[in-house]
Length: 265
Image (tube, rainbow, N blue to C red; front, side, top):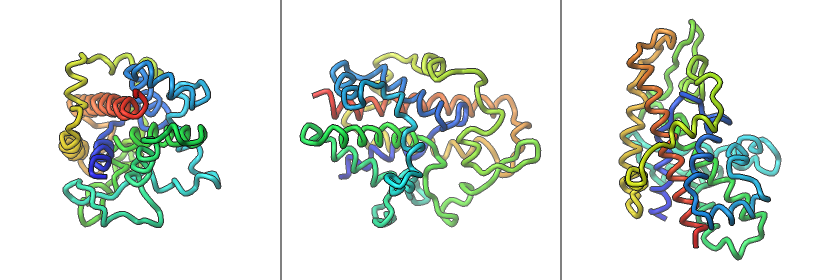
């Protein structure tokens, strides 16, 4: 249980708005992760996904969360943490569930995936694909106002206010215009195997949690409340892009690690 929770915390605290956490963001993360799947794991996963790439289902949860069959997953895209960005099981609402609840359940279910119907394996893969990506965005962390009031603040773009969620999910002016997810993946996925191992830290999930905590606070330090986005300095803009690249990369490598751990056996 503790191991899985820390895996999830990895995703809870950091992302960036350079491409937004919409379809392009999720597909970019999935594409990089796909590049790092073991051949046997990739083959098994695609078999359960009807021959499709994991990229095809990266945003599946967003597309289906409003349907009657999957409405229960609506609250799975966020998770509650305290002011220190620590998850506490006491914060879990068992009637609704949250990101930790959803991802934990999916990982647990797939431990014995060979005993499950193909359809059950497929849906749990889709949960993991999306939730690991989602939870690398700070706006998907459920702070309380008293614990972390700056989480609630707005930013402005040409005088129009945007909630932080809108900013990190891809506010106007922070997209890399014209870039496909393939292009973004090509640019970001450029580290050595040694560096990748450092990011993953196999068997040391506590390290992931500490890294995420650090970058969660870093995300909010980039801009001030009510900041006019059109007046960001070159240094601030560079910080935004750097954080986006870094956390998209980490989300992807960690997603690949989780999938390889399950299916490369």
